[in-house]
Figure 1 (cartoon, rainbow, N blue to C red):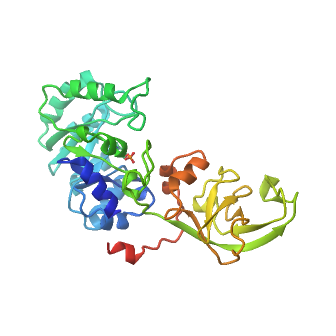
Figure 2: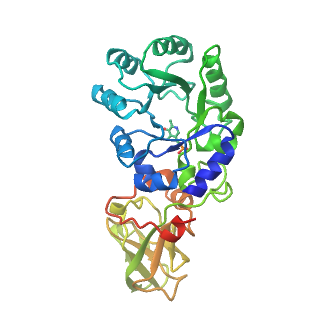
Figure 3: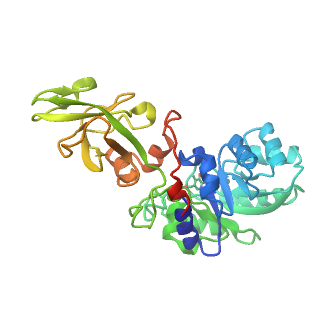
Length: 351
Ligand SMILES: *Cc1c(COP(=O)(O)O)cnc(C)c1O
């Protein structure tokens, strides 16, 4: 995580870096994020309770709520814990005007530059900026936007350059710094770094797209491992697992892995999805069940009960497993279930 943050910083130039730690640091745990990202300039996330937890764990640098506050109670939390906040809608603006803050905070005013998810229209920004400027609790106002296609910048439905154009138009004449870049924009568009960048997935060693994580110089932070708990010798025509999806084309050994969708492995992974057994690439064979999954051991004849299995991480990029399962690495990392035991490898921690 530390090494990946260094990659993000190297691309960000003079910009400050929010380490994005929403969704329990993309499944890696807030305590690990605090250790791995101690060199970040701030932590950005969505959940107000997790923001408070960061403060309780001792994080004194800025914390940013990426969706802002959701109700009056959250405004209180923002005030008490000196959290910086996004303001993306009129309701949030009205709440800030109605409930004066006890601590001065930075506000990240969100521009809807074309993604049409959160934010004010570019032609509304000057007026909202003026209303925020009038609030004594507001320190700096940063203009923030988010790209729909940083990993596919020529997308004709909304080219990234058009979002940049609209953002600069909205910012014209306002004395406000900008924050635009997620991981993909940070890695591919150093010229857009501006005041703050907001990398997420790259910090965990997942690719935001375009190139592989390794090509970007990123290293996997999470390795999901298990073991074989049984082996079945089957013959041609035998079927494996629920729905008998996998039919053996020949005699083979089937390894049973203690990991299933209740651990966060995607149930929709197809036969052939890659799994490492004793470090050897094998193919998923049969539907993933709640607590177990099954794999063709033809490539690993020496494997047996107790053999080490890697579902993704070191030696098997999460993005490759995700692609086989028709999703993205982000979803797999975020979905690791609470019952999975977490071990931080001390040898790697010291680097
Ligand atoms: C999640 C998020 C990010 C980080 O995106 P990555 O693609 O993981 O780098 C940045 N900005 C906002 C507003 C986000 O919600």
